[in-house]
Each structure stands twice: as C-alpha cells, then as structure tokens.
Amino acid sequence: MSAGGTSGERRAPATLHDVAREAGVSLATASRSLNGSTRKVNEEYRQRVLAAAAKLDYSPNLSAQAVARGTSTTVALLVADIADPYFAQIAAGVVREADHEGLIVTMAATERDSERELELVRSLRGQRPRVMILAASRRAGDAASALLAEELRAFEANGGRVAFIGAVEAPYRSVPLDNAAGAESLARALVEAGYRGFAALTGAEGLRTAEDRLGGFIAGLAASGIALDPARIVRPAFTRDGGYDGMRTLIEQGIDDLDVVFAANDVMAVGAMSAVRDAGLVPGRDVAIAGFDDIPTARDVTPPLSTVRLPLEEIGRRALRLALGTLDAGEELPVHAEVVLRASTPTRTS
Image 1 (cartoon, rainbow, N blue to C red):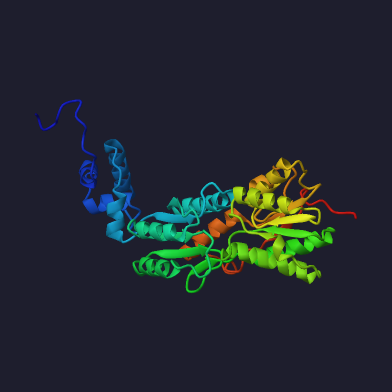
Image 2 (cartoon, helix red, strand yellow):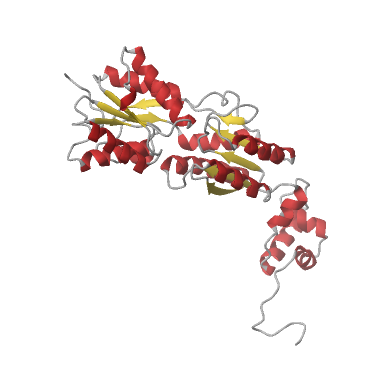
C-alpha cells in the first residue's frame, strides 16, 4: 500500500505540527495562535495559522491541553435535577456568563444523592475543569460531606476554583440566597391577604434549602400570632411528584380548616395544584397554593402561581463570576428574594 493510502482510507487527524508546517511558522507560534495564549502573536502569522487549521480540519486536543496547563477551559456544573426548571434557569445563567468568558460548561445531575455527587466530583477532577459550581441543596450532617470537602480541597490545591449556590460552611465561596427571609415575607403577605389556616409541603428533614424556607415561613406566621400545626407539615420528595403526593396526603387528612398550602418550591406547588384538581377541587378557590422560586411556568399555570421570586439566571451568572474572582463589590450579599402574589392566592374578603 502506498504511503498516501487509497482514496477510501481514513486520514489521520491533523496535528499541531501539521498546522505549523502548513502555515510556515514555528510550533510555538501555532500553539499561541490557536490556544488563546496571552503572549502577542504577529497578526499575519496568526491568520496564516488559522487558515492552515481550517484547511487541515484541525481540532485541538483539549485533554492534552488540560494536562499541559493544569486546567482547561471547562466549567463543571453540578445540579440536583436537570429537568427541574429551577436548575435549568441557573444553568442558563452559568452558560451565558461562561460564553462571555470564553469557557465551556459541562453539566451533571446528582439526583440529590450525596454519594453520587461525591463520585461526580471525583470524576470531574480528572478532567481538570477550571471551575466547579455545586448548585444542589446541601444536607445537614451528611456523612459524605467530609469526603466531598477533601475532594474539593485537592481540586483547589491543583489550581481549580469552587463555588456553591446556597448555604454552605466556610471556607468555600458561595452565592447565598435569601431563602428564610423570602419565605417569611411570603407568610406575612398571605396573612395580610386574609389567610389564617396554613399547611406546608417541604422536602426531607436536613435538606437545607427546604429547612430554611420552612423556618422562614413559620417565623413569618409567628410574627402575626399564627402557629403552623406540625401535623400540617408534610415532607414528600422535593419534586413535582412529591408536591402531588404531599397534597394528596393533606386532602386525605381533610382540608376544611386549610386556607392556603405553602410548597417549598414551585415544582412542588405545581404538583399540589394538579392533586387539588384531581380531587375535584379548584386551586385558588377551594384551597390556595403558593410556591417559591418563580420559575417561568409559575406565570403560565392556571391559576398563575403566587411565589417568591429569585433571579435564577443572575444567580448562575454570579456563581461563575464568584468562582473566577470577577464578582463586583456588593454582589457577595445574599440574593434578594421578592414576594409575587398571583391568582393562586386571591385576597380573602371574609
């Protein structure tokens, strides 16, 4: 067989050496032109390198670059559930900020499993991302937390940077959210709207986001002289189906004494509204429903959902800026939460 091979033979991928030879420049100049070096490259040479790379259909070996640099142009984003609009909005913010910085985002789902999160972090460390952003809610006293901390320390010791979204212990960078204050404000607003009989749907005990929101809601009621009956706190999964199941539980208990049900996130609230309909009742009329987050679908469901708005896309952007060290002064403060009352909690006149 000739050195050139037959017409049907697959050609080997072009290498950086091939590009340099085609452009008539040194290997170092070709590398700087293609790999974003901070060292200035003569514009004529750079254009010759780019033209040669296009002609040869050259693709850089990102894994090799990561080994050489000790890092890559990748941002690793870990969320609890890719299908959850809350995390989708945060991811959109991370991706848009990454585009601005010339970085690429890879995303993985922990499924709210701390052991899975630990394994994902271990695997991602081997890919040498520049940044890891952990967006899944933390669990108090989690047995895997010490091992996760070791992995993250090793990652940062090798030049990586970590940022969390939500509550986390020092010394990690984190974007704090006003979960408790937002839920407290919602409770006060619902009391002002005439509501007196309350129930809550929240996640499993120890899930910090859920606990913060429940605690804030209870505090808001207490400030108005109202106590939330512990029997009216249901702890299903922190998902749409969990909200459905939790609302079914409340309906089976009897809801004659209930005016409004607070769900600790919007997807749970949407599930609760479906359960109300399936029971032959009307959300907002027979029992009011409120959520938390203000995901886009909160405005589109019927009736539109009362909730607490968090600027989810901005939270994603801020998390990446925090990790990269480009956060503006004042952005370290907790992200403000805003109560938004809609038709799912109409004002009560009696």
